[in-house]
Image: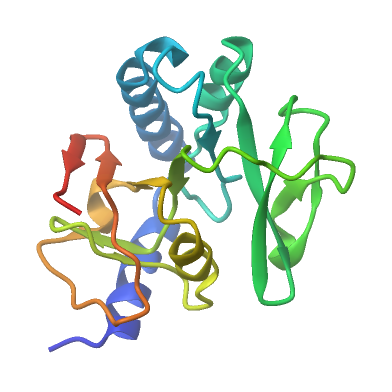
Length: 190
């Protein structure tokens, strides 16, 4: 049986081998699906969305984020400091980011801390399963943050090839309420 690290490595290699055209097409497909699920921004306007800036061929939801901003949906992104991660509100996908930890784009220091804690949180990862479990990248940032903010609606974002039928979570792994891939959105009883 594969270990957590072996499964993560295998799925990340598959993702890294995707060609840029497939990344763009599948990302657009997932983004469009979420735009419709959010009823073109209407269902999340009052609660807000926590997004992530794509890194190393993660699903790229930049067009969705631009649409949400145009629909006046509060939008925030994570910024890492040491072992902690916090979300900060952005108003522009072009102007409100700078390179941060791990060479990932993060909200500029001038952005204000997000205060919408009933938001939908879009969460990248290395592997997801069909029961709502997620493996991240091994540092635990999302797991720690999500365990401190239990009211967030946790939605994993992944390519279908990043999914397994079942993975074994550790006690510190926070499960998802839903998972969006190019094949649809799965909802879990979490």
